[in-house]
Image (cartoon, rainbow, N blue to C red; front, side, top):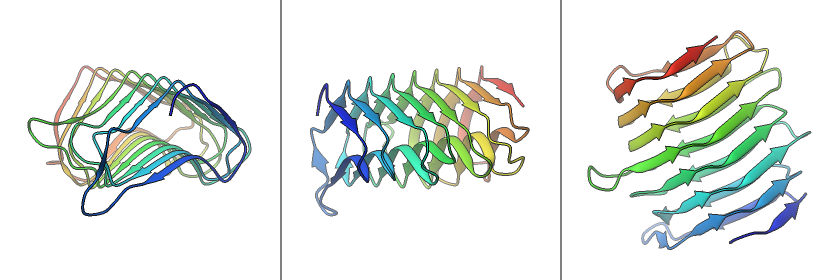
Length: 193
C-alpha cells in the first residue's frame, strides 16, 4: 500500500491477517493519512511488516492511535514515520509482537507527537519481545502528569532502547517501564520532563 492520500473514515489502513499463519509481505509506504476516527494504520497477525515514510495526523478524535500493531511477529519494521496526534492515546503501539534473537523488530527514526489532557503514549511496547527502539524523537504535550509517557514499556522481554529523544512537556514521564527485566539495554537516550 504505497503513496495514497487517505482522508477521514473510521480507520485509515486496517489489515487483519490469519491467526495461525501470519500474513507476510505487507509494505505500507509513503502514505498521507488524516482525519480517521480510530486508527491511522492498524495491523493484526502480520509476519515482518514494513511501515515506513508515512505521515499520520489526527486533529480532533480522542482515543486515537497513529500506528497500532497487534500480534505482528518476527522482524517488523516501523521506520521514518511522522505521527502527530493532537488528542489523546497513542502514537506508535506494539502489542504482543514477538521477535526472535535473529529476527528482532525495529522501531526507528520516527517522529511522534501526542497531545490532549489524559493518556498519551508516544511509543508503547506491550507484552512484546525482541524489539529495538532506536533513534526516535517523541514529544508528549498531554497535561496528564500520570498518563503522559513518551516511551512506555509494559512487561515483555529483550527490549532495547537506544539513542532516542524522549520528551514530555506536560509534566508526565519521559520513560516508564513496569518491569526491571523487560528492557535489557537502555543507553544514550535524551530524556526531558
